[in-house]
Image 1 (tube, one colour):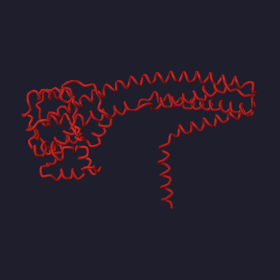
Image 2 (image 1 turned 90 degrees about the horizontal axis):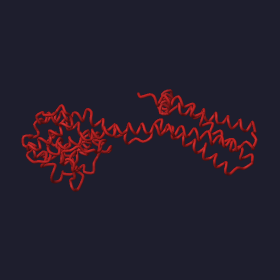
Image 3 (image 1 turned 45 degrees about the horizontal axis):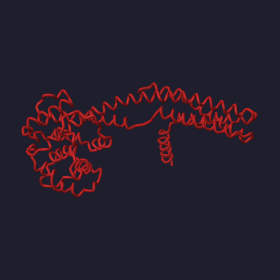
Image 4 (image 1 turned 60 degrees about the vertical axis):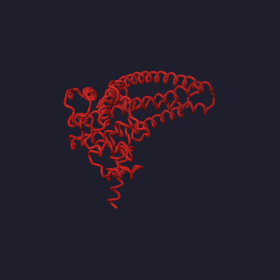
Length: 358
C-alpha cells in the first residue's frame, strides 16, 4: 500500500514539473481580480447613463495599450529577423562546406580503379540488385532500429560473398551522400560537378536523417579502420586540384596537404565534431516561428483588441438601455481589468525573459 501511494506521488510530481505554475497562478489571480471588478459593478449599481462613457474609456485605453504593445512587438520582430539573417548566413556557409565535402566524395565514387577492392564497393553497389540500397536503411537495419521494406535485400547484401564489412559500408555511406539511391534515375546534385560557391541550404529533414544514421561519423570510423582503401594516385591532375580547392574552402588548415585517407578522415572529423550539429541547430532556429515573449505579447494584443476595442465598439453601435445590457458592459469591463492585471503581474517576468541571455 505504501509503495503504491509513493508511486502515485512520484507520478503526480513528474506531471506537475511540466506545468508552468507561474503562468497558472497569474491567470488565477487575474480571474479573481476580474471577478472582484464585476462584483463592484453589481454592488455599486452604476447608472445606465454612464455606459457610453465606460465603453469609450475601455476602447481608448485598450487602443493605446495595444498600440504600445504592437510597437514593441514590431521592434522585437525586426531584431529577431536581423539576428536570424546572421543565422541564415552562417547556415549557408556550413551548407557550402558540406557541399564541398560531397563534391570530394563525388569524385572518389565516380571512377573505376579508384577503389582497391572494387568487387566489395563499386561493382557490388553501383549496379545490379543492390544499387537502390542507401546507407540510412543499411545502418538503421544493422542497429535493429527499423525494418525497411527491402529487408530481405539488405540481408542478401550483408551475406554476399563480395561484401567486405567496413569497406563496403564506407563506399555505401559516401555514395549515399552523393546520389539519391532511391531515385529511379540515380539522381545526384548537379552542383557537385561545379567548383563554385552556392548560396543554398540543406533542408532540416535531410540533416536530421544524416544525424540519425550518423553517416559522417560512420565514414570517419571506417576511414580510421580502413586506411589505403582508395587509390588517390589514379585521379587526374584536374580532379586532384578540384579536391584540393574544396578542402581549402572547408578548412584552410588542410590546404596543400597530401591527399590520402588520413586527410579525408581529418576533414570528416570537422563535420562530426562541429559543422553538422551546428548546421542542425541553425536550421531549427530558422524553422522556428514566434516563440517566448513574442508569443505572449501577441496573445495579449489579440485579447486586448477583441475585448477592449472590437467588442466595446460593437456595443456602442447597438446601445440598449436595459439592466442586462449594463451587466454585460460590467462583464466586458471586468475582462479588460483581468487582462491588465495579467499584464501587470507578468510584466516583471516578461522583462526578465527579455534581458536574460542564458
